[in-house]
Length: 282
Image: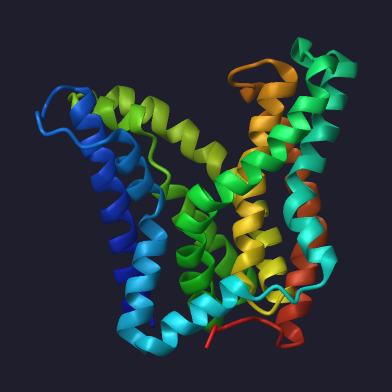
């Protein structure tokens, strides 16, 4: 099992980071070959899913691909899981933006005139980003890797391992460009704080997603929707505050997420005790 996990991780990173390397190489003028930037971004986003599909096929052949398809297309799921998947992060950001604005925290603006448009944009972005980022990652992270981890590790440990791998995979192209230009110090000064922040956010978010995954008997559809709405929620924050990068709100969100962990950690432990962990999609 561990060898399979290692192969999956190497393949995921190789696909995504290679695409990002060519993306940066074109920006830096290192190569004359023109590869559409949108295509490179798509390949980078789909690294985990491409790796997951590949390993599933090598392990289970046609049965593996059928299992993935069924998990993505199964819609007979209780409405509450759809609501949680779509609105959990949006609800948390609505609360955080409201608290930050009305308390005067870092002079956080709120644009009332954008509220209506922001919610319309949220639903459009949820669908778009579910296809571009959610579908690009979730077949790998939750479809392949999570069941493997849950079959070999206690559920909390499995969730933390998944969060760490997921976080390390997110290599920003601006930081990669610094490394490629021979500036390791600049790379580390940006990479380390970015990774610490990402891990602090990813761990409690993965607790939530693992709970939803097990509660829906391994629904990749719910995972894709959660992922898409999560990214759309951050875009909602940008639109409703008028800030291009409202990073000052992330510490508040991190605190909120860890408070939710007070519920989800015991809930995950109950799922493990009751043997409700999904260890295979087959």
